Image 1 (cartoon, rainbow, N blue to C red):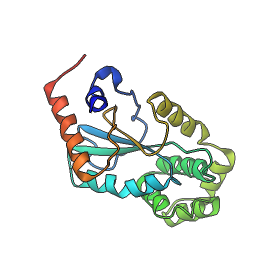
Image 2 (cartoon, helix red, strand yellow):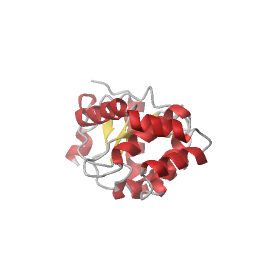
Image 3 (cartoon, rainbow, N blue to C red):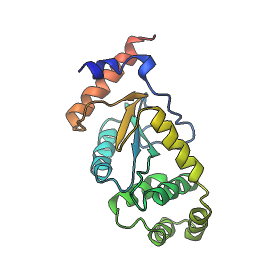
Image 4 (cartoon, one colour):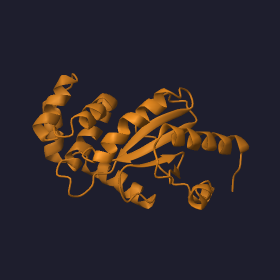
Length: 192
């Protein structure tokens, strides 16, 4: 509990840039941003994804979800999948692409990603070229570096308005508790 309450200290909040992430899942005007660092091949991320999405949908106007890639070395397709997700972000299809990759984690090879882009109405060959050219490598690398600076060492890792979720429980009850605490903290106007 000490770590949890210490995480409210403004000096311990991570500075995470969400300005270039496009539309969040949920109400863009929601005051609390739930930001997830994840790896598309991570089985724990695959399990958490539907919980986070359902939580955001069940709390309209209160919380929105943003995503940053954090591919784990050793996951063969994690980095290309992260780069493909960034391509999808630029194409305006990030969330459907994200969902499809998490639902089909064994289909993250290049041909499957290209087919997914085509199924979603985009130019799959443009994605193939972007992957071959490593067009989004720097963007993924910058997200990883920012994550490491914020203390991310594994996936999934989530933050609420820059405050790291330090409780190793992602149940609806705990997520509701931390959301309410974040809202109370914001209402109190407590600043350093």
